[in-house]
Image (cartoon, rainbow, N blue to C red; front, side, top):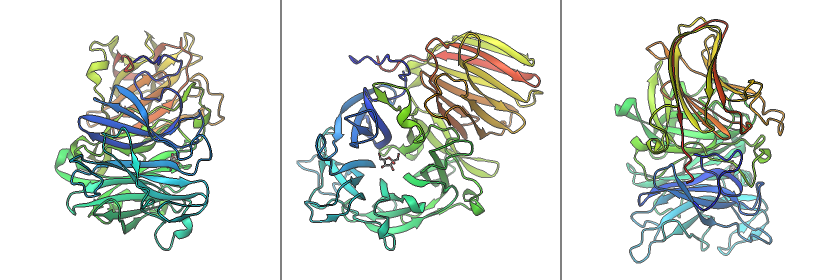
Amino acid sequence: SAFNYDQPYRGQYHFSPKEHWMNDPNGLLYHDETYHLFFQYNPGGIQWGNMSWGHATSKDLTHWEEQPIALLARGYGGNVTEMYFSGSAVVDVDNTSGFGKDGKIPLVAMYTSYYPVAQTLPSGKYIQENQQAQSIAYSLDHGISWTTYDAANPVIYQPPTPYQEQYQNFRDPFVFWHEESRKWVVVTSLAALHKLAIYTSENLKDWKLASEFGPYNAQGGVWECPGLFQLPLDKGKSMKWVITSGINPGGPPGTVGSGTQYFVGEFNGATFTPDDDSVYPGNATANWMDWGPDFYASAGYNGLTADDFVQIGWMNNWQYGTNIPTTPWRSAMSIPRHLSLKTIGAKALLIQQPQEAWSSIVKKHPAYSHTYKNIPKGSVDVGITGETIKLDLSFSAASSASKFAIAVRASADFTEQTLVGYDFVNKEIFIDRTKSGDVSFDTTFASVYRGPLAPGNDGMVKLTIFVDRSSVEVFGGHGETTLTAQIFPSSDALHARLVSTGGATKKVDLNVYNVASTWI
Ligand code: FRU
């Protein structure tokens, strides 16, 4: 690429826009051998505003090319009368919408129209100030240019009865084709009520309310950006359905701000019924998709099979997202994650694994590889690692240490470092970013995050850790526990060491691989 992606803190293998503000991934669609990634975007600044749909494409979910803006806020440059909030996209193969022409199959996007001012639309519909409603647009040129359906937008004008007064908190449609009932299904959020509303349609234009879901489990903030999809359980022995939902604030314990929870259950084309063990009486806890602070608004790809299902999250947090020290852009996307379900401890858990064309960017031979029978209490130097690395770390759960961690992106004297490790006492993975570099822009940023992980049946704890210029993503065990955290380390903080606390850690195996930039 001609653009220089070499700025400090610029993720080298995570998508970020060249410049300006980005939030949620939108309209994730695999079509015609191309992965589309649309995203909430401010074309005019590095703060949230003028919300439009930016666009990037990829052939392998690894190398991304930014495309022209897909949906530009109406009135941009003057008085904005409509912003394009989060949503999704489908290929309307049978042209149910009638938007197809001359044999061209339409791509249809469904999004939230946010109207900052009261107005009467071309469709004749009267819109109140700050109303949010669901609209559609189509593309006949592979997602490059889009035409909004002005004759009838918004196609879902207001929240269902009796929640009409929630018209300022009704958003984020995730639409998909439900093969068994041969209908389109869309899940939207009644954000302030911690509820989801599910609708069905035959043509993507006329929508009928089918059911409501929630509130359940975490309800500390608004529910946003829901997802609904089917996944194989235990490698395809059966299929289950999953709902994901962003919550902000009120994320995982120990975080401040945004998080993503999930529910496992059944869906019959109209109603989602959660499994008994997926909802907690008294909302005691929640199933967190990621236990770190920086994984939000996660969305899934349409156009892939249930075996291949991939999601991408916004690797930021509303608590401090608009203040992170990057320029001339703000925010990056997570590594794409492959999703499935696995029975662990009698419960169906979401399993996530990194899904990128890794072989092309991860060096074949580890830059550092070592097996230790025993790491005594204290630390072992690993030397200098790169800024962009993948680490495979495993060790025995039967260790006398209370904690074991690897310090990455550390200064030579380890006054600056990010610790990624395991707490043997509480059986938790942790990321400690209290000394991770620049933590000054928000008082809550310098914190420790924890997610539960039982050792594997082989008695080992396994962590796969992705470090980029401004992020750490940890996949634990089979991928049943993940933690994602941004960090803003000094560019010369490249040291690493293993740290065993309170005793020795046994059977330690470490492989560190350099990861190449995907921007070149
Ligand atoms: C979530 C969110 C969505 C909304 C979008 C606006 O991050 O608040 O609910 O559609 O951002 O940019």
